[in-house]
Amino acid sequence: MSDVKDTIVSGKAVLGIELGSTRIKAVLIDENHTPIASGAHDWENRLENGIWTYALEDVWTGLQDCYRSLTEDVQKRYGVKIERLGAVGFSAMMHGYLAFDKEGKLLVPFRTWRNTITQQASEALTEVFKFHVPQRWSIAHLYQAILNGEPHVPDVDYITTLDGYIHWQLTGEKAVGVGSASGMFPIDSRTKTYYASMIDAFNQLVAPKEFPWKVEELLPKVLVAGDQAGVLTEEGAKKLDPTGTLQPGCPLCPSEGDAGTGMAATNSVGQRTGNVSAGTSVFAMIVLEKELQKVYEEIDMVTTPSGDAVAMVHCNNCTSDLNAWVNIFREFTESFGMEVDMDRLFSTLYNKALEGDKDCGGLLAYNYFSGEHITGFEEGRPLFVRTPDSKFNLANFMRANLYTSLGALKVGLDILMKEEKVAVDRITGHGGLFKTKGVGQSILAGAMDATVSVMKTAGEGGAWGIALLAAYMIEKGAGETLEDYLQNKVFGGDEGEKMEPNPEDVKGFDAFISRYRAGFPIERAAVDCLR
Image (cartoon, rainbow, N blue to C red; front, top):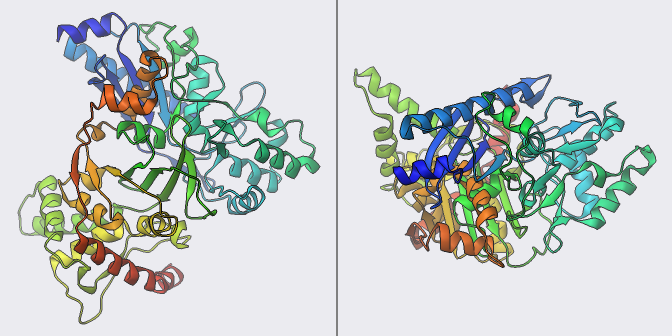
């Protein structure tokens, strides 16, 4: 306790804050990278005029409330105030579009990653760049605004991401980490910055419009893990802590997206490693040894916080439908006058799935609450389907719903693992799907035919991940890579609890996915007919 107090009072504690889609979380760590305090603030995006957005006022009230709750936690635990910090890092949901004029005024409401309004731009840029540009990327939003003839475009002076915006406001620096930048514009992993040829191609593409800017002038500077990205200004300190207790001057690491912080928090930044984050949505990140042979619409190319190439499979749907079914069972038990602990209910039903047939007994489910680009659906309809002779029992039912939570992900991963022969030594799972010990882990191992680890620390999430990146900035020795730093100084070789794939699970998941693919016309009919 006294050591932790000394760390805080002497200004050596490191702070990480991440703005997720529903929660802003702060984690304070000590010199051993151990979380010593935390704070949080819940928030929600809004659908305004057909655009998913967050108001900038909500960003600041949320950040301030999150930081305030952190300071209260510190006061309650240790009886001291946070006056100085060793380093700070900010992270947020990747992608999106925040466009400002020369005076720093926001030109249009923040367009988040959740918007799917840039298909025309996405397809056009993918063709021009010969590089997959997803709809949620910042450059797709900018080009779509150009195609739409939106009047704000000539006045754009700076575009950035949510993490880049916060970093700019607190330091005055227009810079982002390379992982965050890789969700704005394609990154060349050899130069650790934007592809020069694609910058030129974009400028030529929009040249007839005669805008008073070049695209490279609008984008933030790209920094890599370990770089110092500015210091907390006096104005920035007051923006974060209106009480004036927090003093300016501490260094900030490059801001990062939630994908990069997830890699740091799961020790998945080295080649042949990867992680799967499975909650409301699901995505897999695999650090590549070599470039992919082709461009795939299903695969996004991003980077680690150090700029190494990463193949990302991102799916909109994961546990929402699974949770809805569990709630049906909760209602059932409550109808009998029984109160049931939800953790126990999840654990019981998840473990029941392990008793089911490896191929789910012929059952089929789709968990599409929303559209799923990987499988070609612009809208979703949750479905459960069976034939009269399917083996319909609780174990197979739960197994089918667990399988389908990774169904779209499996379609994308099969491209990497089976077509591109991408090698993976270790996958780390984190998120709600892995909360029940051994179940989600075994399902994922079967889906990927790969060793899957789950770490206790992965539950600390992206706020801890960005705190680690901030600590790396101030601690790294000459030539120490982020991979070495995490492996040796943070995780100490701990790879979590490993689970090898069961060959029968692998065959069973493959059989389910064959049925899943064959049933796409059923899902299409549901989308077309159920309005």
